[in-house]
Image 1 (cartoon, rainbow, N blue to C red):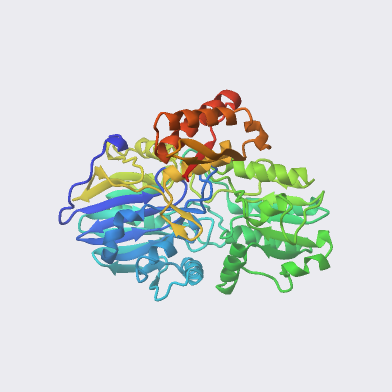
Image 2 (cartoon, helix red, strand yellow):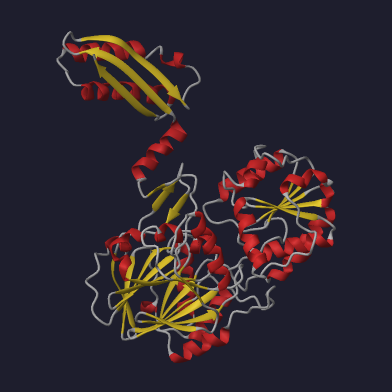
Amino acid sequence: MAASSLHTPPKLRSGVLRIIALGGLGDVGRNMAVLELDDKLLLIDCGVLFPEDDHPGVDLILPGFEAIADRLDDVVGLILTHGHEDHIGAVPYLLRQRNDIPLIGSRLTLALVNEKIREHRIKDAVRRQVEDNDRVTVGPFDLAFIAVNHSIPDALAVVVRTSAGTILHTGDFKMDQLPLDGRLTDLRAFARVGEEGVDLFLVDSTNAEVPGFTTPEKDIAPALERVFARSTQRVIVACFASHVHRVQQVLDAAVADGRKVVYVGRSMLRNMGVARDLGYLHIPANTLIELRDIDNYKPEEVVIISTGSQGEPLSALSRMANREHPVIQLKSGDTVVLASSLIPGNENAVYRVINGLARLGAHVVHKGNAMVHVSGHASAGELLYCYNIVKPKHVMPVHGEVRHLIANGDLARATGVDADKVIVAEDGVVVDLHRGRAEVVGKVDAGYIFVDGTTVGDISEASLKDRRILGEEGFISVIAVVDIRSQRIISGPDVHARGFVEDDSAFDTIRPQLTTALETALADGVDDSYGLQQLIRRQLGKWVSDTYRRRPMIVPVVVEA
């Protein structure tokens, strides 16, 4: 059934478990699921999606939790599977609406969330720390937590046992058999839950199109060591601010090469401080230096670990590439390592930064030309393995773009899951589970919620369209003062442009035509400013289109004297 043809779901019957994805199904980001049973709601993850080029002025995109805005008092808990931004970044925005929703997660995950809560000045937040093999009850939901390996420590899968059936949600995971922290994905626990019976398996889809098994993290170390050994100047490594494992590898390589390390970027400083304090990051004494002291060391003695691996415009790396960073000025011969994968949709921004760095003479090392990053997600071979040991009755791929969800569904079918029991859904699709049977029953609105500065949710698609026009096509304003009673123009029309033409004299040709059109309309009895403004917009718009093949935003203002 096509998502667009789905209707509003029926009222939930007693004893039926309802599952709704409010984000993460169709995007790599803003992950959030809602489970409802007996008038109680359990949430799994609450992350952000980072804006793309067609979201001008937008800072973050939140899950569609407006769909449950009038049900927040029924929420018995929010499970956070791990500490990446696409799973925890929206938590403060949810807590603004109800600050005492119990947050359930591992030690590191809750510590990272605590920093966000503190920044947003949210008081009285409730936290419940769990670890793998813990089992807790929250409302009508019996929860069990399973260790999974990911690109951040302390990640968890969650088993949700209910009277309507059992769900296993993997969170983000992979099956690295030689993990840097020694914490394996607990496949024995997956198998035990599978033997009990998994009615609905929610599975990470991000790498479902990638054949085989994801490369182990340890394979990156030799590549980083080679980069350091060849560099005769500064090394700048850009990675996610929550990628503790990658930062540890860079620290180890820096120490081996006799270099000092400086963190750049507020989120990097904050997260690595938390990881160090909790014992997840091990830093040899006298390794870290302050940014203000960087000029006290020779270029070959320094490594900079920075944010900005996704080309974010305000990140430290982007500011370096644009020569806008207040402290760090890149020099020809510096080496920049992008130690992360490309999030779909960020390609243009990342390549823009790479070109800027190369223009400055930096040697740019990235996943395309060196083994400096491996994924944190299970590839097709690992997913097949999981399907075979869990043997779920139903499968619902999560966490990915539509193509990833479809590929994951194909893998499930290849292992013997019936085709009609593989639910490939998008955000807002409603699935009901009753007596071990899952079916799609409708769809709710789970659209984007845009954050622009301190403004949340007031930005519409129409306003984004206006912003795109302003950015791509430019802006023209026209001001005229008229006397309706005497039917004459007192001043103007004055035409000014921004982002369209360099000199307003370009409009000398059209000004007389606008004057004639206004005079004719006034003589014909047009006596309202709106009608005159529309006349200007049509006349000027046609001229601009015919002359420049452009469609700028035109804002006419007619003032009645």
